[in-house]
Length: 229
Image (cartoon, rainbow, N blue to C red; front, side):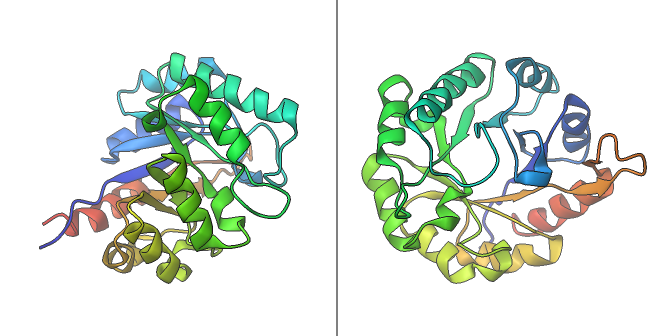
């Protein structure tokens, strides 16, 4: 029997979210500056995207570069997570690592001091963990239930073995990074629960540098729906 496989589209604006909705996406992840892997957005952006009608998850990442954060940066992440949820996002997408490549338990604990675990998703910082499977167990032990991951690879399709481990860990796995419609059957077979993709086209004006393309959303949704039959 085929499984239900929702599609989450990465958006940077309300206009992107409208296209994602028109294309049949199930929800969106909101972030800015995809050219550096995505950064935090304003609460105004969260409110505007929520008006488009799809469930919104907001990335909380205060700067580009690695995921090892200082005390003040951890405090900022906690504040930003609270703000995006108050602005209407259903989840805050967060993450951090220690200098030796483990999950930053101090950051997660600080987030859980003020927010329920089911309002948090751990992001692709896990893909840079020193020991991927140990990091999965850390997340489970901390009480988190969702993770956005490529299985430690540059593209999710190349991380299938670790994605399978993630799905078997009991976490809800959102598979993202370079996902194309042709990858959906293999990702589904690995046990992941959600497909995550940017579905982007470069803009000729470079302002914005890219935008969500309707035909790409529709193609990805069509591939995912084949898995739902």
